[in-house]
Picture 1 (tube, rainbow, N blue to C red):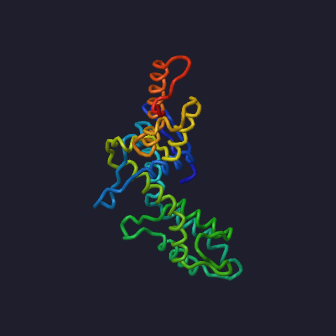
Picture 2: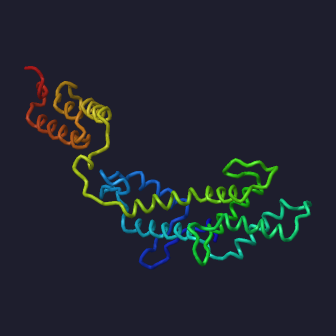
Length: 262
C-alpha cells in the first residue's frame, strides 16, 4: 500500500478534492477548535460557527477512510516474509548462515509483526509500515535508538514498525474526533468580534481624532470599548450617529461639542 497517495473525493456529490498536505492542515485546524465535554473525556464539542461545512465533512470523511485503510491489518504473510527476508539478507552476508537458521530467523521477525491477539487467518502490521521501517534501518535513520553495527532483534524491529505508524494513528484519532464532535449553537459572546480591549480603544480614539472632536467628548464610548461583547464597528456606528446629530443641530459658526462644558 502506498501511504503517500492523496485522499481524493471523486464522487459527483463531492466535487472538491484536497491534497494530502491540505487534508493534514484541515485536520489540525478543526481539531484545534474542539472543546472537551465535561465528564466525558472521549467526547468533544464544537460551536456551529466554526464547525466543518458539509463539503469539508465529506473531505474529512474521505481522509478518515484513507487513514483507516492505512492502519488496517495486513493479511498476506508471503509478502511480509519476502520483505523481511530481503532485509535480513543484508546482515547475514559473509556469515555463512544455514538455510534452516535463515528460515527460523525470518519466522521470528514475521511473528514479531503479527497482530495481537493472534487470530486465524493471521494478520500483520501494515506492509507499508514494515517497508518504511526497513528503509530507515538501511539508511541508519531509525526513529528509535539502534546501533547499526548490530542486527536488530525481532522485538526491536516490531517497535520500529509501530513507531512509524504513530503519526498516521494520531491523524486518524484527530479526524474521528472532528467528525464525531457534538455541534452546538454559539452564544452571543462566542460570536463577538475577537478584538482586544486595547485594539477597540485605539480604534475609537483614532476615529474621534479624525472627526476633529475633543477626545473627552464621548467618554461613554471609550467605556464601552472595555467590554468583550462590544466591537469597534458597533461603537463607531454610534459615534457617527451622535456626531451627525450634533452637527445638524449647531450653527455653522461653531458651538460647544456635545458633552463639553458650557
